[in-house]
Amino acid sequence: MSSSIKVVVTGAAGQIAYSLIPRLVNGRTFGDKKVDLALVEIPQVVDKLKGLVMELEDSYFPHMGKVTYTDDFSDAAKDADWFLLVGSIPRGIIYKGKKIEERSDLLSINGGIFVEQGKAIGQYGKDNAKILVVGNPANTNAFIGKNAADKESQLWMAMTMLDSNRAKSIISKKTNANVSEVKNMIIWGNHSPTMYPDSENVLINGELGSSVINDINWVESEFIPTVQQRGKAVIEARGASSATSAAKAAIDTVMACENPTDEYDAFSAAIASDGSYGVPEGIICGYPLVTLRDGSIEIKRDLALSDFAKSKFQTSIDELLAEKDAVKHLMKWRAKKR
Image (cartoon, rainbow, N blue to C red):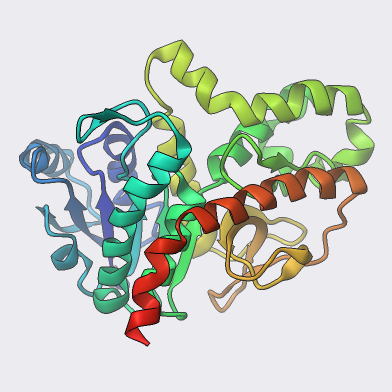
């Protein structure tokens, strides 16, 4: 094996992580690298990870290196290359005697968690570490964590690949194209019901979606709402949130970051805006991304957005700005630091 890599996974006793973790060491996600795993859980359930570690050992993954588990995130973060932040407080649970229903409550509660994790990643993670936030509200959790880490050389992302994969599946059915021939499927904005899945710039067998689909009524009344509400539909159908598909999307994002992007393609993830496409700088926004041959990741800046697309995108940008304002109290520690 050519080298090793250390990956930290939070929420490691949950359903998403149970599907995700074995794929990290299967020899495909990180190629020929040996993968050391640091699994993190809250104190109440951390001991359950002993059974997961036993299963990993029993599976005999040749690319699996050292596996540890802990409830101490700072300890797990030391010299890590990748962080998959799956754990977060979900909507609907009882937290400190209150049922969490509102997005504002999610932002406040999870904000405190991601401040502490961000500080630890900035202090202990590798300077070039990549961080993928899966736990919702993902974009603003990533925004909080990145600000707390305060290390520009680290790449913070929020996952929108699940939405992208959902959109690819719907488009493949609509156009009778193999899902592998649906590329450049970008989710603009927030990972929330305001997201804009771009049916115009998607490539279907190499042709633009704007010319292949040519059905604005279907786009507006079926495609966009279905993608936006798919997570809710899964919960209603199975009584639990997406797990297998979320794990697959996390792996897809990691692999997209680890391998050069094919020409004419792009992958979907949310990163800190640099002002591209008129998005205010700093917010974690869903963009088209490409991985270059030197391993760097950039925003693809040459996509054209119609007035319709710009309007949908702006709605999501406005929501991200409102969320930024809702967590501004969590940014105060940076001002004190400076």
